[in-house]
Amino acid sequence: MTPSAPQRADTRSTAASMMRSSTWSSSSSPITCGTTSSRRRRRGSRASGSGMPPVSQARRPAGPWARAPPASGCDSRGMTPRYIVGVDGSAPAEAALAWAVRHARRDGVPLLLVHVADPEQTMHGLALLDEAEAAGERLLADAERGIRSRHPELAVSTRLLSGVPVWTIAEQADAVDTVVVGTGKTGYVSGRVLGSRSVQFALAAPGDVAVVPAIDPRFREGVVAGVDRVETAAFIGARAAREAAERGMRLTLVQAVPAELAQLSRADAESPLALAAEAALAVEGMLELRSRLSTRPAADALLDASRGSALLVVGPGAATRSPLGTTLHAVLLNANSPVLVVRPGR
Image 1 (tube, rainbow, N blue to C red):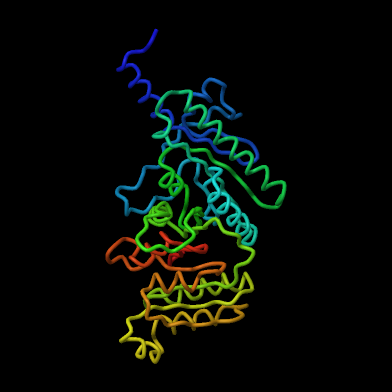
Image 2 (tube, rainbow, N blue to C red):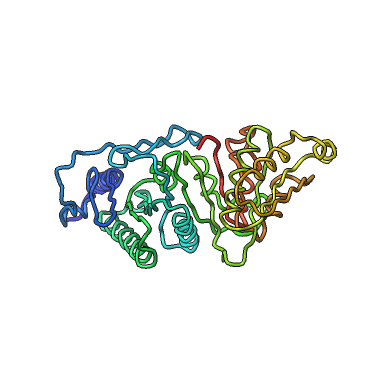
């Protein structure tokens, strides 16, 4: 019998509710946390300990500028830093995954692979929900298997979730974690609204965020860091210097100022550029340091300096016209190299 319109609407509502309440995670073997989805209900729980009590889901932050709270419930853990990367099979996601693997191995920290099934994209029936879940499980399993075969020493875990991808992934992160996101934008075109998901991640994640364009990292050289104010200059300079030292590369510090202030800034021993340079030189293993004072718009100066670089390090920006600052917003929309947004206090 063909269901009536109200029945179909009720079915879609029930399916969406199931998807929102379902999570699935695995390390060496899958475990189920919370309420299972319809497909896993039908095929039976994969978990060996089915007596696990329900776990409440982390709530989405109130408003687009709110920081995501630390993960809780079955995600509770010590404050060991992790790299968290979304897996969806796209070229930008593959670039982000490769970047996250390299850095997790370098730092000796765990790697968490996350796939998010968006219930808003699968509202036409349970069959599509099943397909989305199955595809996500295959992606995660393939990615984990590939990483383990190449890097058996790396601690890798996976998690299949449902919800809005940006906010759902951000909710898995603590302040000590780095969320890694891919972007398909690899050139600077002022005003073009591309790479907006990277901006959303920078807003939502409580810790550092790495935005990785789909580029070949083998032919890139040097680390660039942007500084804009005294309060964060030393932190950004030291953090960028550590990234440069670990890569065995030079560091270029960039500060943009109005043309009428350029001469004064060059002579100021307490300028952001001077403070960042002092902090960078104190980092062990620092090979080469360059400082650049530019009178161009800050986003233009940073994007031009980082073209061809291995990494651009920036702070969260001054929240004047937007929560990230207008310069960081423009840089993330038009990233032409990997961008690491670092937050003081980590």
